[in-house]
Length: 394
Picture 1 (cartoon, rainbow, N blue to C red):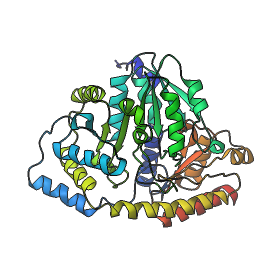
Picture 2: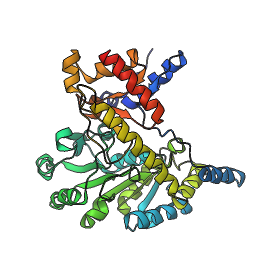
Picture 3: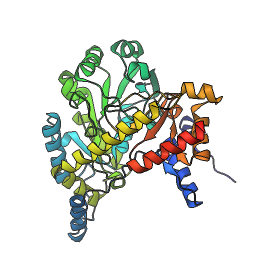
Picture 4: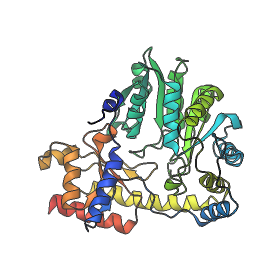
């Protein structure tokens, strides 16, 4: 006898990026030299001073349960980070520490959304946003953008998407997968629309905050639109900026009652995030930030290389990004020229013929594009581009 799964599972799909990573791992185990440009996984090691703090924490016995919402030390470090980097003030009760930024977003969806609520999500979007919304019994409402619009929604698009059921807007800047970053004026223009709809909350996913090189400095949504502070939930974490993906520490800051509800969700799922990782995250936030600047400078170097290399290939159109470690070229012309039916077919061709793993744009709500991560060495990037060129044009 086989057991059936819940009807809820029909609404969601496994993570596309996770699937690419798993396939690359499987092919490597078969002896193939796969270059993975699929996962958002920094190739840098976690800085030594952060690892040292974790080793000391283990030696000191910091291996027990912590408060569900995070240690007092880490929450204080997060408060200092928000004050220093974003000019935002949050009380300890307004902060929740989670097992990665993904858990913070998931807790938010379960705590805020009800059946038939609508959530506005600009596309291209991070792959997990729509399925988190569906798991909370709400409906994602997708606003499509594209390369010609710099991958950003306009106030008119936002206003047109809002209905009486709209409960949440998800913004991600700098963006995974596009690298696009909203300016102060663009955020404020969206804020003017949202100010007319007091029942709509805003979640600002700022996980790539420090991996940015735009002419205009990064600006948190809650700072750009202070009148919406009480409706904004800011999501961040240490995974990307500090090369700490495996440590699994994220955090959320926002209205006390909503953070309290998110804490309740967490109390019935994972409880606290890893105790040792919390010590390491405290060290990361309070420590020498030049390590972040050095990694970001290298990402910018790789960005400049891969954008130029992609734009030299027939059928690729790649917009320079303002941050993250992703390139998101439009490949519709290439698909037509090669007689390929979809971006998925192109990705399958590249992994089979070039041993290069990428993610199709359709996974991000953007058919006709593809995402390439440049969170790997410049030498591997150069080799990947040689392989792609040989597979497509030789």
